[in-house]
Image (cartoon, rainbow, N blue to C red; front, side, top):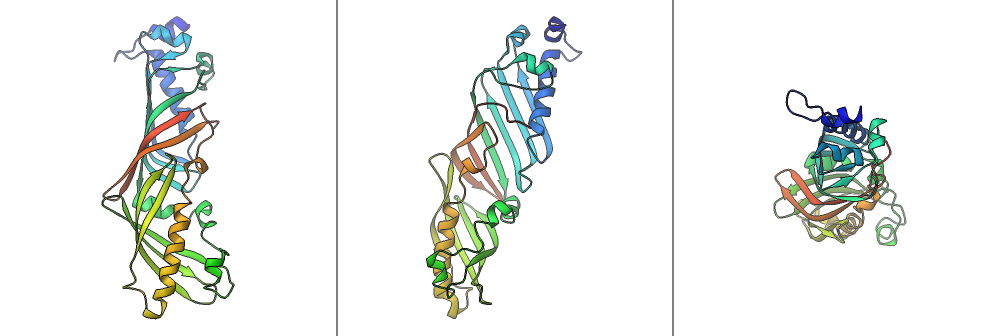
Amino acid sequence: MLGGLTGFKDSQGSDWGEQMLNTVASQTIRHLFTKSESVEVFVRCYPSSKLLQGSIDSFKMGGRGLIIRKDFFVEEMSFETDAVSIDFSSVLSGKLRLKQPTQAIAQVVLTQDGINQAFNAELVKKRLINLSEPTLTELSDGEPVSFTDVQVELLPNNRLKIFAKADLNNGELVPLNMTVKVGIERRRKVSFKSPEIDLESVPEEQREISETLCTVLAKILDNMVDLDRFDLDGVKMRLNRLETEGQKLIFSGYAEIERIPRT
């Protein structure tokens, strides 16, 4: 039977062993996401007999319209490995297990709409509401302060326009408007630096407090996006580059895959 799996070709010349592995891998990876528009996996192994020893030449995954942890929308995600060692017996039981860790080249594409949706996620909102650090409570007579209605506009040259409101818990809402530069630190953290605060659209009596609140919000955002908080079980993302392109934010780097995450 095993010889047939790795030696029989269909009418397109595809190997049944590769087909089975593609199917199992696609099903395994698809279940990692809350929702997915499409997930495709392409495995290459030549000669096909190497599959019996768990050796494959390359592994590619491409996904579109992915929802991670119910709230985070990813327009596109892809990764590609070189040679990978897998447990072939796990494939026969409909699962996918690595014999040893591997690395994959990775790319993630976020959209402006997807980023704005993420600000409504509980994981993000809890870091923006009911804040009681002294810098804020000095402005609100000791009351906790919340940042709400956060909206992002992607700009060329890795810049973001950020609009928000600060609720001082005293009936006063302060409009915030600034532009920041986004970058990468330590290959895992997205930084928000060099805020340029725009006070033109802010009422004159609120401009001083708006400027202070913009500076605080920029610092909060700068400490918020650490990829280790979003890692899938057994997979760590590391970034080499990011760039804004129209209404998309594109990350490229690599994934350290210790094991195929549990579904």
